[in-house]
Amino acid sequence: MKCIICHGEEISPADVFEEIAVGSNIVRVPLTVMLCRGCGERYYTRANMRHLEGVREDIANQRARLDEVGKVLQFR
Ligand SMILES: [Zn+2]
Image (cartoon, rainbow, N blue to C red; front, side):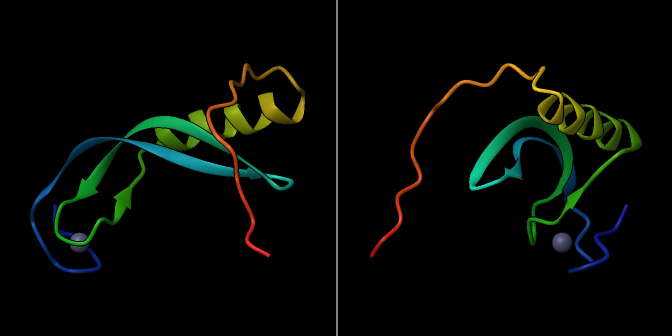
């Protein structure tokens, strides 16, 4: 598999956080994706997409278990 962005060939599985915006909050979702080591482009499998869809639904229906892990600070 070649990266469509940088044409590099070093693409391997990596544990990342996908960030989903919910209002002014960000939900970080742990996910294993294929990652280009050259440019950082992420490649999502159908299972990845299905999982993220499910997470979005759980958040929308307030079924998601979310822990607060930090704060977002806005500079004035
Ligand atoms: Zn790349």
